[in-house]
Image (tube, rainbow, N blue to C red; front, top):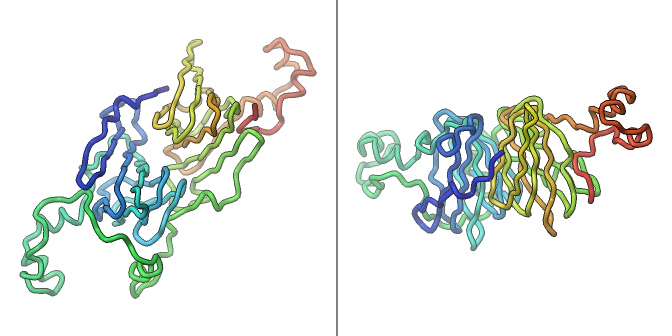
Length: 331
């Protein structure tokens, strides 16, 4: 279990932007997932790029952006396989902040092929022949890679969508997903959880997620994940988490917006909202499906005599254990 904002010193980039990376180089335990937090002004574009060997997705934190030809708002996400070119552009006057998630803790931004990098390293005459133009038409191309650059604010979405469709039409694969428009996987008086995995978002075959909201005083129930380690990102609010390990070991830590947590699979844990506002966080897994096992659900399907003897409780107490996983409990 980790709380590490101090490792994420802002890395200034051009045009009033910054990048914050967190991968296995910063924390060796991050062997399955890496993340990059990007904060950009309005209209800057993280350069048109193609990932060499990693699949990635993005979650909007508190902003509006355009990805290729789809506009995204808070909590929306997209997913791209390696080698699929894409671009991201800020739409809001105050800029945009979004989280990039990669399905390998060894990921580095150096494993990204940029359009500006292609143009900088291929001879102008070859580029001109490739595009069917005179070499002098390409004389203004930059000679260095541009990770983020300014461009005009995009026009109507429909125009960009038409350009993206070209003569072949819209891609048969849906690369965008809006959790806010889906039916909520679980909603209680204590909060809600929205699941994004291959069952709801077909192209998300290597990263699964739950977007969890816990109301003040609420509790993300005691549970564990049997299929993958859990990587957390706290978007807003304040939380307290206890993780129970083997050998009678456990650890409790507090988390704030911007912190991350990491729990190895099968380790029981809970997350409690310690503040006066809603707690929102992401649960991320390197898996095609979101799976969790509830402590209440386990005990409710275990012979009552065995549970009562082990916990030294009476039948009335056992009978109050929820028969279905509550996911998020109220105050």
